[in-house]
Image 1 (cartoon, one colour):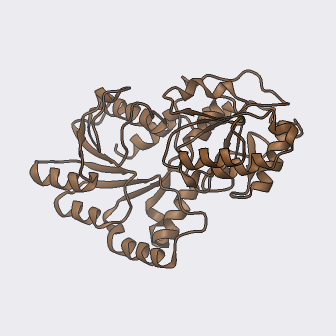
Image 2: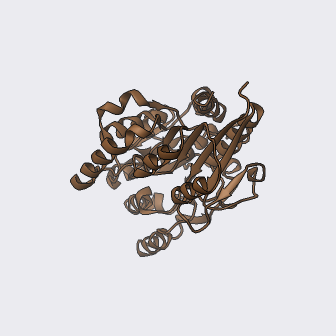
Image 3: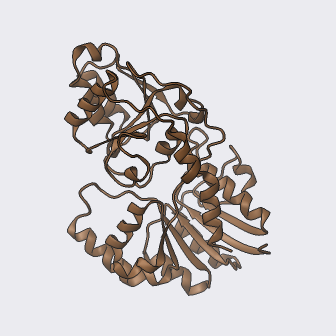
Length: 359
């Protein structure tokens, strides 16, 4: 058992009661695991929260300040003796890590959740990342990629010399409370989208694909969209322009998606960029196959034709052809998709793998 060890965890992640996802469950369970083993965790978030199990966490909120800037000020104003400092959703290899090492001997672990643009970064941004890597990566002890794709992208961003410091720990989901679909409609299936509504999620491509479907399918197909985001008005306008209001229903944000996936036959995720999607894992755990794109770590969870279908990102013609064949039952997924998540992508495994790093 680890005794009296202190860990600081910085998360650029706003805590919202109407948006509870896989990472929230990870934070709660990791905190509980640490407490059971005598580890005190100090959580630095942008805001305080009481929903779910956040009331159990020792949260220090940065309020209007950037989390990194606030943390540095907090440490300068308080006596801290953290054994580990862990970051989530924080930019890698910035001078922030050099500044930490000036006053702390803590081991620094960074978790990279950030997807990359489908066409890569600009030349200028690539050079800037390489320079940041050369200057600041030495102050980071361990890099964690949430997929093998992410691990490769860290090397691509900052340099081959980091390979020895990078490991993969897959994201995982809490499968116990995810309701499971028992049967699946082979013909006329129902579809769900569960996504933050921003342009990079590619839902506009899905709208275009549906507009290309034969009329007899367009009169029937229904797609429920769960989520909110800055691109919502654009999507609504596009749906109206293409006269597809009967095909798409915006359901808003939902804190109980774990109970809703099972009401649908397939999940659609036409994303342009992805690190490793928790919504894909949750859908699979509900025995709901996923139709998604060949970006990021998607193909590490989805095997085409086995537990879902893979199509090219931004290719609306391929997507509409795939939708048509799935809707008519010409292409189908017969196997139970839950077992892969149970075996490989459970939240328990994720927590254990992260906890091992601070033992």
